[in-house]
Image (cartoon, rainbow, N blue to C red; front, side, top):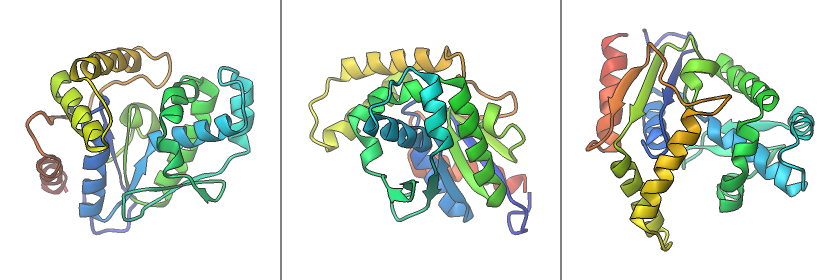
Length: 227
């Protein structure tokens, strides 16, 4: 792959929660001069709007109607991504616990996911991007130039989340977080739509024991050696 030509390129990064997808995707995008797309942020934005409008979150028809009348843009900024919901920056609002606890309603609705996937593909057609999520290499961009699947041991992923929450001065229990990671994995793998799965042609990278920078360097070496 010639990274200097004008052809739009898509690189996908999938993996379970806590594997380091967001940090690595941002770093890889910056190193390549690509845009960065966090598909999860798009689901969060629509969830935030649904909550603001007091919609019944398990009513798929309401969610589909909402999606059809919503514009979500994901643009780069100093912190990685700025999320615009109908033109308004909601980058902070979509990271609240309330949104986190309710995003699964959007993620599990097949008709809503269809709309989201079209939005994501539209973004990928306009510019070279590094995109991360749960099904970006299997569903959203099955023909991506490069596909990565990053993972880490459950204990390592729980520890990372523990350190992240401690830095925010939140009271957390490592054992409880470990169980939460295991439960999240089971939920993501067994979803009826958008299930977490490694694409057959994805390159597996175990990030246990690796820093984000080391993981990015590993990916860059793969991309450039095959370019």
